[in-house]
Length: 237
Length: 237
DNA sequence: CTTGTCGGATTGTTCAACAACTCCCTAGGT
DNA sequence: ACCTAGGGAGTTGTTGAACAATCCGACAAG
Image 1 (cartoon, chains in turn orange, blue, green, cyan):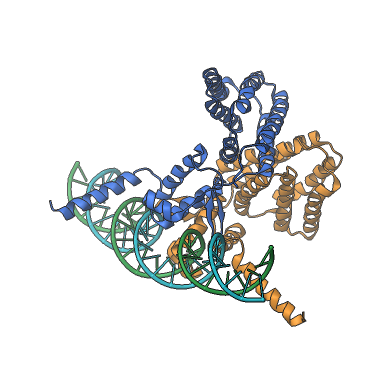
Image 2: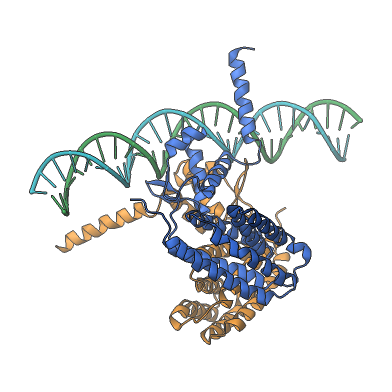
């Protein structure tokens, strides 16, 4: 085969993959909106008008509504009957709820972890390294992202696809809360070291102590976020 | 009144009846199908034809598809592009995955449980009592249901709405697995006593030992289900 | 036996229309 | 001034039909 033939083949495949890409217009729309919500472009409380989005995205209402369903079940949108879909406004109860779920799952995974070799700990190591790097640069949002990756990797140690998906949903909701605070530094900075310490404990096989530390860690994070969130500058008159 | 007026009135009433609940048609359809799937009326692997269901349920294709989306995200249906939705056929990997998730969550909740008074343990007590009663009657499917209720109540001790929802999803998938076995007795009978023992430990405040027992309990249940499932009579040539 | 292709059947997506509901605004009573 | 009822206006909920894209099995050619 010639090079020309090869590139033609590749282009065909690329096109097929894109149009095939594990579902359809609805999923692509969902991905688009997901990014906007997570990135904070759409502040909590905003309504996503069907009419408007149909116009902008050039998809039918039905397709758009399927995308809404997807995001609703990820917790990134809330659906109120006959009123539309909104970017959720999480309150303190939600925060408490989310952290309870986190503690149960993350500590549950860590506590019954038997023998985690270096290979399986690699993603944790990478996440910590990325966080430390971002902290040196003073890029606190990036630190937050890296820390979240650390916790996702922590849950992944449980080796359950379903658990991973659950954790991803919880963290997506948590991002919604983090967004509302003006200065992210104090929320992320202290935990870079603590993640490192946690990783060291895991590498040493001290799962019991790791779980204990993680529990305290998450309690601290929760109460900190609670106080910050209480006097958050969100007042929409 | 003319016939035309009557038919208009009937149509209005019919719609009112159908939509008086604070839920959409899609959700009601989903609930209907959910029951059918969980009850085992639709064996794993069956395809749910849109055309057919539209005919039977008297809803439009779009509405039906929204219902499909709902159930897909609960894990009760799988969606294959351009092929339709199917009742999932869970294999041994799924079983392992589900039990890993269960152990992490349930043990995670129990381990960090501090002070569960009698009131909060009440649902657990009720579930155990129901299981014991059903066992006396020899109604093993009912025993299975009661046991599942016990575990849901266990997760509920974590006091997190999101955790409860996750657990409900996992247990719904597990039901799909339990259905495939012919004789449910050996799968449920032994755990009635063990649930009782677990409850006693919790009432005594021995959370650490309870978590330990629960872990062993779930490991036993898993390996038992694995062997049963391996020689399950499901062969569709 | 493998490979390629055709046609029927099913799903993916769009569109337009109407019914039902929420929200806001106004009018009227106290 | 306050509350309540009711009427639009605008949005969502649901339907049915239509067309395009895709899968599946069958059949023919090598």
